[in-house]
Image (cartoon, rainbow over all chains, first blue to last red; front, side, top):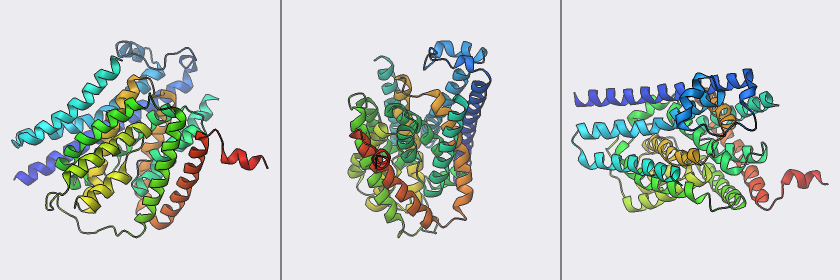
Length: 119
Length: 267
């Protein structure tokens, strides 16, 4: 029974990863297509990276850079999802040591992100 | 101008993805040199693009379903403590290292990678499907130390680090080869994400360069996984090793502001 649940958990992780990476590929592809159709957005003066607050608005306007950016961020998140899912299943198995290790890995990544943003 | 370049980047990604799927590498090993040498992308942005494509090969491979059964998540997670710390160190260190230093390091890494690929030629695949946890993991401290190093290299050069992680687990830590490969694949994605976030926030991920390369990598890795079953991997490895040695030479020369193609053209 436990092994079946384990196999199903592994399958759903794989499906999540695949869906996330497929979604990001589609976003990036759509962004590229938009870049062809609306080259006006790709000017030298356009910012290299649209800040998070402005991202939703830029998406609404069909900014190709915003669409591609969303694709990149989504892809960057998929390994983190894997860690969270793994940590959660460790917790359910009451494997507290590995739950902590998973949290530590997540913490390292997020803390360094905060460090990078504040510098 | 723009459409042609996008197409060329797509082709680059496709090639990298195909080779990556056939040989079990992330493909970053080709992406960074070609972007730097051929597309004149500044090396730190080439590395940023490469990191994103490494995540693509780690998360998006069709083999992900199969790999899940063979991944030793506990071992991978423990070693990830080392690699993520290393990756973060590497990503921040890039600001201190100059482009020439990075190009030199990359050239040296290419040579190491090419040599370790040559060793693959005599290694058997190992058909028996091993069960995760049926072996005893040895030398954890060494594993952590080398993982830190692998993470640092990944964060600084934008490569996956497979050529370091797989031998570490398989040769030094007593892990069966197929488990080592699957676990390394899991770790590579996490390691790359760790440094990619930092590159992202420092503006080193250029959308117009990254999107076409990554889309190409997705298609390429699908094509590569299909081809992998039909091709004689021996020939592919030899071809790849030759390409890697050539790129290594060009990268090392570029650190001294020289170029093999220019030198030969000067005759």
